[in-house]
Amino acid sequence: MRFLQIVQRQARVSRRKAQELIKAGKVQLNGQIVLTPFMEMNPGQVKELCVDAKQIPLKQFEIAVYKYYKPRGMISSHEDPKYQNTMGKVLETAGLKGYAVAGRLDRDAEGLMLFSNDGRLINLLTHPRYKVRKRYEVLVSAIIPFRHADEILSRMKKGILDAGERLRIEEGRFLGQGPNDSLFELILTEGKKHEIKRLFHHFKLPVSRLLRTTIGPVELRKLKPRVLERVTAGERRALQALLEEAGVNK
Image 1: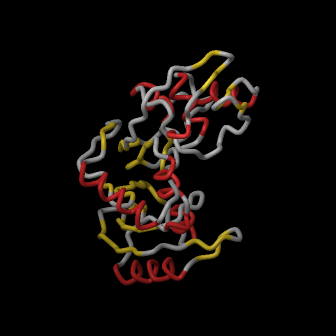
Image 2: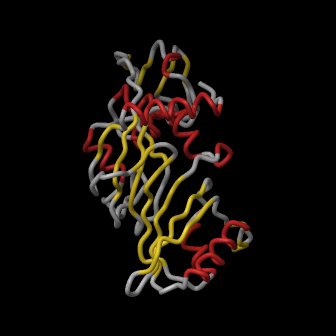
């Protein structure tokens, strides 16, 4: 967990305020001033915490993971001075201080997001070296013959060079056609900026809807837009198994 999150949760201040206090040298950890907000540490290392010359009564941490259906039009960041419809507002409303988001989505995309106060888990789910699979349903505004769809997916698996970056999918399948559109399912393990849109743009196919349905073992299932709930016991065990398999440092 990042030191910033520990201060945020223990002192019950906003993410921005916690960062300001740390950088101003107003936070002491175990008798020493700490100036690094994003330092990774185990909450168990915190024996004494002083903020603005006041000792903070320490609360016991409960490690938890929540899933959320992000609707279209919401920004994945914690805060945005020009836009109030953010993931940070969701966390604030739910009283989830010290939680980070695993897996960002573009403003016009929707679907599964995960929140946790376990820094190891956030690292596992977001760092490309762990190759955690994310599944997406992608609707494009074109009627694509099945044969052509197979060719598109084959090229995406091999990789496509765009703006100096190699974009690729792990797996993909064509789900069918509608009256004016076509539906694909893609699995990616690395999320470069606008990667899915850029992949389809290479074939001159505009994406009209982008929905993330899974992150690792956690599924969107029947979760409704703007609903926040804890992951199931089975999903929590599966995430713990991923952590152990990957050997992510405590």
